[in-house]
Length: 396
Image (cartoon, rainbow, N blue to C red; front, side, top):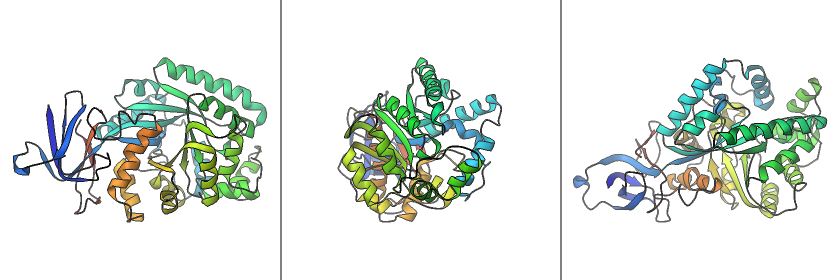
């Protein structure tokens, strides 16, 4: 039996934070018991000014883009970001790309990420993810603006799915976003993803996306026209409502599958009502540092908190972030939405992420019989608030 204690314990089991709490666990990491220390001075391992929390679940990452750190200009908006990623993707040698993936996967694990929903466009990360103790569900993202290309794009991604599965990975196709895909491809890739029970979709990430879909104008629309590519239909409504409409070409609502809407910077009450009417298990992935990096905006967190939708947290990629650090994402949320407690944010970053991945019986809570990972967050201020010095590291 092993035992560790700290100034704060966040079991995330409904009890609220525990001051001077302990957790006991066996050699495999299974939680045996949690509680309040009778005598802090008698504890063999007490972490003052720290919190013990379950392992994080990063619900949105592009680990294969890790070699792109520091290459992108900030604040370009989505149109400028797309131009940069088209110019810079695959410019590094494969050996360098793979070594960077391996290093970042190791770092994620050491910082306490227990599971991850990862976006892949190729096979560079497969062997590394298969060998990692970090559980990953891989979403094989597809693009294609020309309707006639849909069959060959789907053939390619289904071949990639077979390759991922040969490594023992949970993997299935997923659509990227409404503005990079023909309507036919949105539906075809959604159908393939929904067959696995899971879907991840970049949704309402930027006002430029909304302008493109609502009125057929703006920088993203102009980029597509200049490039000679087909543009998405101008619907007069939000990109989210367009996506839901394309989903219903797969099968009628309601949808029992777990569907993750990533970013939702522009989500409004109309979109929330539509999501709740049509999706039985909707999740939102907040990636605040990426949103600031690209277009200096944040999701409407207060609206989302009150909506009944399930919030989770992701890091996005090192093309649009300086780090893949869950604590930095939580600190950003805390600084911009100070009314949100650390306990609530940890529920997003641990418990809710585990629920999205269907791992809520094992991950996300420090509860007897579960094996969620045990993580320390250090340098907390009084009242269990994160500080600029706060970092995370794995205990078990």
